[in-house]
Image 1 (tube, rainbow over the protein chains, first blue to last red):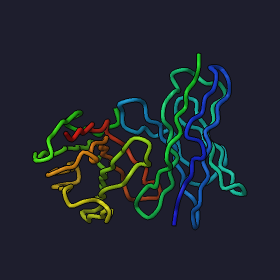
Image 2: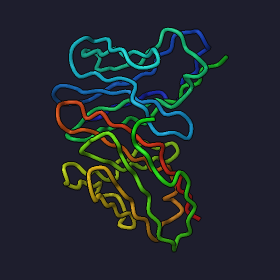
Image 3: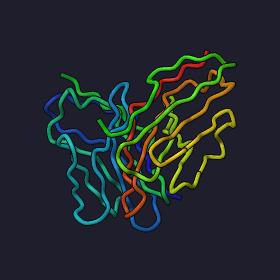
Image 4: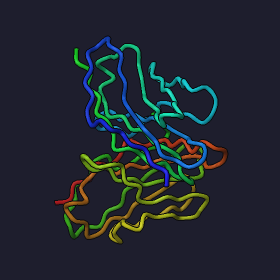
Length: 111
Length: 114
């Protein structure tokens, strides 16, 4: 069975500081991993994906994610957080024709 | 905008009502999805329509009935709902060829059952 886990329900970071939102995965075969963001009263927006290739994946809004096979992790990162980055973040993995989502991490960037 | 629209954006209905949620995608995708998002719970996949085949989560009650008349339109028919069905209902679409299955989401319908 394919699954992802987001160990933190809530992450707080000061504006201008680097941020990390954690995700670990458990998949058989090659993992296909995704990050989505959800702003209040909106649907999920695609940020980035890892299919194969470079372990550092760059996405929208200055976000990047690092794929680490030995640690089965796919953490989302940004060098300098903005207050507007405050949102709910979801990690997901592809299984069959579907995506399996993590439980979400609420990121709050404090001014 | 993601190219996926949902109407209505907000819906309040009584437990004896019948209503329908509508989703339309303008991306040329061949798969569409309904998700339920409740507070403090993981996203729950309810139904998938892919290449005209329907896949459903067996835990979804029969009071939710999907309809997919073509690859661009998806409906969720609601009848005799319960208060615990109050949630944000999200529609998504994707292209199932290749290896990506990247999904694009609509803004959701906020449903309140009274």
